[in-house]
Length: 241
Image 1 (cartoon, rainbow, N blue to C red):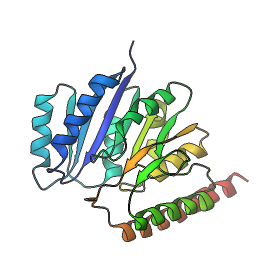
Image 2: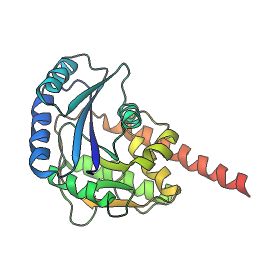
Image 3: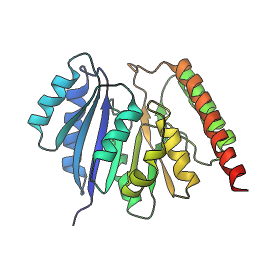
Image 4: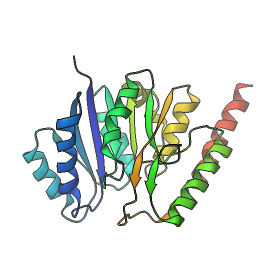
């Protein structure tokens, strides 16, 4: 029996690139992916034509489904889409396809080789990236803080290119509280603290120049979330003593 894999693509007001990206992804998977797969477009309360386009893509491609949410938030979209899925492996990637798709089969196969969580890394040796100096500096600074404050050894917690086993969906995802961009960091940390095996894969990644992420406000929220997460686990340790 083939392994089943769901690929979630969270979107918010992506009418300009959604059709091209989903068509590219479908074409790639048809030719290069050996497992049984489906794509779930998770619409985060878009106010443009994104939902309309998503529904038309679901009619065009049998393996494309649409999940509409009335609230924004990438983390919320992933939590709902993953927990509704019954696939053996669930994953996600950003709609801009910034990460080279050739690494997707590698990421999924690593879960079949003993790992529980797999994530793309833009900061490992061997990764090839193209982005502005400002974003590069902020990304590296953020990930240094993650490692120092949370005491983890993975290098890139925020790459929008991840896959997890069903066990992670059942055991870890319900504990992840963040509904936005910190979802990735929190997911990896909680999985790490429970002893699950995490595989980082150096990827090729090109920055989306049309990114909607507000860098400085996002980083500020990240720092607050890191501190809260660290304090939570410190209190847990004290209670166990």
